Length: 418
Ligand SMILES: *Cc1c(COP(=O)(O)O)cnc(C)c1O
Image (cartoon, rainbow, N blue to C red; front, side):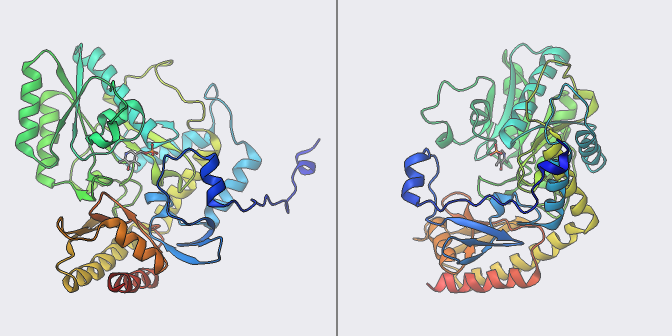
């Protein structure tokens, strides 16, 4: 049978409507969902099953880089599925090679390993750091220092890396080999390295987010990260940055670390990398690329489908100069939210963020929580996501327009009144 006979261009796969009650009967209840069933998206907008329109300032949590139904993604998906969508990593494919090349040419890394998610990318980074510790540093019991309020994923190793007990509760025994310090605290990290070096366990790596996303949209301090970079270089230990949420143009630069004037030895990417197609990557400098054939693998990782779409997203980011849009729209959003903060000084403490990852920070003693504000915003046709109980996060697609940011600011005015 020729490929032409197989292709049915007008075929569409309708999805039968499902009630939220049915959904909850059949799907495990790992998420507290808003009572909305989303059906369709275009650009920065999505529609629910009642036909209500929302401005999507969640974007799959900083994932839909190009928004919904972007023509470039439609074309990349269509072309690649018609050409070759999956083969094993037993073989070479151009799509994986070209994506790795783009990432290396647009970052400080020399090489990439592909997987399917942020947690998996961080698992790869942790394994790489441990192997480097064993084989290069001669450390028998390597420790990775991470930060309080961090978030690195939901696998056992990454909930252990995550410095938040709420993600670890009832899942012990956790993974050995992690040690936690407060974020943005230079003295604490110096003490931790000294303490661990004096004991029998030794520090192999420090793993941080350039800006803590889930932990409350908390940007890293430049002086803190520069001290850590020096400390890692002095001690020969690895600096790992989790760029899963802030990478891929989210901050107005390709990578979060560019805002800090430093380079990591290893970094991870996922969320925005495929624009909503599942893909993750662990990237590293060549000196610490100690993986050899058989050390690490992933069946779906780097398949031609995900890689071709991710490459199309990367090229669009570059060719359409989206970084300057991210910078301008981020300024516009922060300016508007700061005006709102001045109107409600008893409720809003601060507005902080980089590019298009911004947090509206509520006073710790304000009666309102971030969920209250998110609920009120939904009623005004805007989707937002909490980053902890007192921070409302704004992470729209990077293609968001000036008019759309204005609309969201107006809706926030109404939401605060209501
Ligand atoms: C979302 C996130 C992860 C986990 O990514 P998954 O794809 O959900 O596994 C890891 N680190 C950071 C910083 C994240 O924001």
